[in-house]
Amino acid sequence: MTAASTLAVPGRTQPGAATRRTGPGLAGGRGGIWFVLPFMVVYAAFVLWPLLYGLGLSFFDTSLVRAESRFVGLANYALLFSDPEVWRTLGVTVLFTIGSTIPLVVIALAMALLVQTGVRGQWFWRFVYFAPFLLPVATVVLIWQWLFSGDFGLFNGILTGIGLPAVGWLTEPEIGLWSVVILTVWWTVGFNFLLYLAALQAIPAQLYEAAELDGAGGWRRLLSITLPLLNRTTGLVIVLQVLASLKLFDQAYILFKANGGPGGSATPILQYVYDTGFTDYRLGYASAISYVFFVLIVLIALVQARLTRRSEP
Amino acid sequence: MTTAPDTANPATTAVVPRARRPRADDGPSDVRRYTPLARAGLVTALAVLAVLWLAPLVWALLTSLKHEADTTTVPLEVVPDRGFTLQAYASVLANGNLVTWFVNSTVVTVVITVLTVALSAAAAYGFSRTRFRGRNALFALTIAGIMVPPQILIVPLYRQVLAMGLADTYAGIILPQLVLPAMVFILKKFFDAIPHELEEAARVDGAGSLRIFLQIVLPLSRSILAAVAIFVFIHAWNNFLWPFIITSDPALMTLPVGLVQVQSSFGVRYAQVMASAILAGLPLIVVFMLFQRQIIRGVATTGLGGT
Image 1 (tube, rainbow over the protein chains, first blue to last red):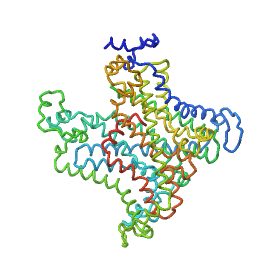
Image 2 (tube, rainbow over the protein chains, first blue to last red):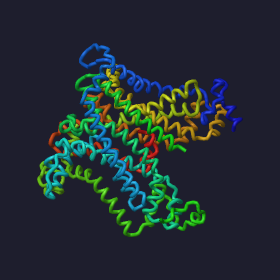
Image 3 (cartoon, one colour):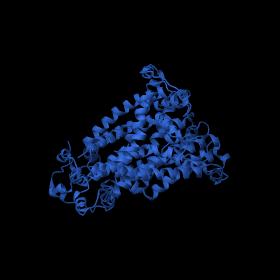
Image 4 (tube, rainbow over the protein chains, first blue to last red):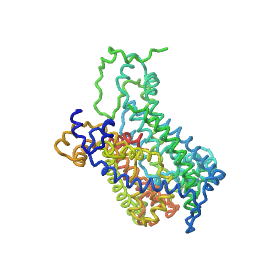
């Protein structure tokens, strides 16, 4: 094999690179740059350039309604840290993230464990729990707006039907954000459910068979085999979910018809960025808020990268 | 203390009297291990969750099948006296732009899926099986992109696409959605694991990198390519924010964006709003019914790397 790969290395490759073992790339062919280039061009044009451009914008007082813009240095960032709306919407985002991540992990795990027991109707359970994830956000929101509706909604219909007072799901400041949480859990739990299901299927059946022959019951097998082996998956699912929840925008924006919820109680930080940029036309300031948010996301993504690396064989 | 499961004892693992079921997606557990009481509990828990998860969809469906006047009765009626009608669907299909938006969504999503898979697979092959100056640096740059949330790019991207004259065009909707660095990462990992012997034999026969990519690597990677394509498709079909920002012409809107207009245009005609919502959600649900196993495998494969 060594002989074959030496043969295969084209003479054109630099000698320095040839001595560096990169495992799979050892037998590398020529012309590789042409495979990578198309992707890199699109990547540079629509991710890297806007990323730099946005960073640049954040140092200007650029506005959509004025032709020229002035360099303002760190003024946007200084303003941001003293802007109560930034902190308030960040608080809303963090509250949503905590409030949604816990049920999205716990319910997903419960669903996966229940389905994995092998109860009949596997196709049906998987379909029901995962299908909402495939619905476009607008479909989800239109359905839930109807369910949450004050006078004719299903929820209030049931509540008043059993003699309880109606709830202002979309109108009370203390409840609006939790309505978004409920909607989001229903919509996206299926994704985490699938990740857990895949992890459960990767557990060797022999472990359970051995435990069973040793007399371990269902709970014992769950506590001693299944849950410990799922630790790593749970770590990954939590980080992915936190990253996803922090990016809350679509469902909150549509559910409350862009008004941020009762008393602004359901305005996530990305909606503040959107409003600042596209409603107030303050692009420079919106970019600055984006960047502070980005730093937060990167910190959490780095945690994820560490977890992913550890989970590799 | 009860004894911990003894997995090391070969005598216990050797005897497995029960035949394992052949279907891969049935999973390793076996329901026959449970007592009838435990089994009843499991089924009850599954059923309660299923009812909770189905109820919103069933209620939306029922509403969409009612006469408008029957949607707002107090107390609620599950089955109205007048019975059901397809009137709302007929009105929505006749008056709205749903068909246009469906066509737009299909075109945009198919183009995004094909181009993203092609770009990502080629790049992953370049990173995995070829060598060139700067390869590792470019790969590191690609991986770093996984951390960039597309939402933070909307302001600069909007100005850029506007300056390019691509607002309210298919190109303007599609181009910024073609880059998913996580997919390059997933594909590269898969390509890395393909044995080199095949490729080397072809190289000795004089095959170039392009032929090896097209005739050896791609055919061996069908499963992962399908997984990536499924992930990209779902992602693009349901993407809301970018198409929402860049389109103002209803003739160019995708389904998720157009549907938001329905909110205001149909107002209090709840049967029609629900009919629109259901029609917009239906295509992917039908596809899921037909290809459940493939989609579940695809999402599970790409899920951890693909967010």
